[in-house]
Image 1: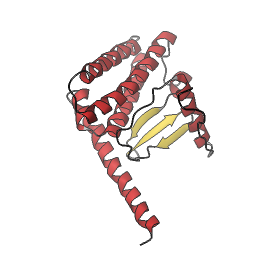
Image 2: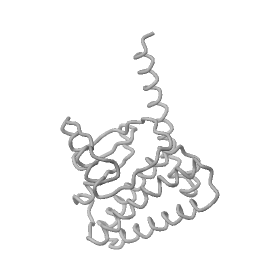
Image 3: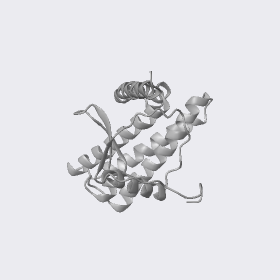
Image 4: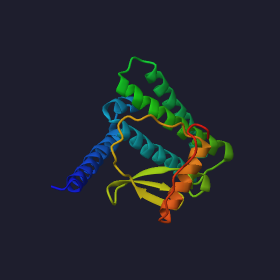
Length: 203
């Protein structure tokens, strides 16, 4: 048959397969004895998206705890995230196979960024999920109503794409890349497009 037909079918099957694998991975995270053991059993992209879903949940749970009267909830979360980061650092120093090492390296970059955001919340007394400092972050959720991963930033809301990525390297996340993401998500919200341009590595 026509190539566009079977390629479309293959793409649909890829998305359906990765949705099932991601859903299983997210639910296993909640039941896992430790995050490092969970990481070893997941494919790279599920390890990243699952970690970001639970980071979002932990931050919003800390905001709920603050609202309920626990004034140190954000500080306690910052301490926990630093401990999680240190465990990954310890893991990357052990004798890992190349695939697990790539997963841990990518997750370290995500974790450093997540820890830095929460540290900023502590410094600037961000205590509410409605504040722009939190609304402007790239936030990952597993929406039970539609049984899918949803990504939100400011007014934008998008379903996760489930495009197989393999174990790609991960760009270090800076204030500039954060602004790029925010610009692109807002453009997509208004049915526009966008493409970062410029010589690589120059900022």
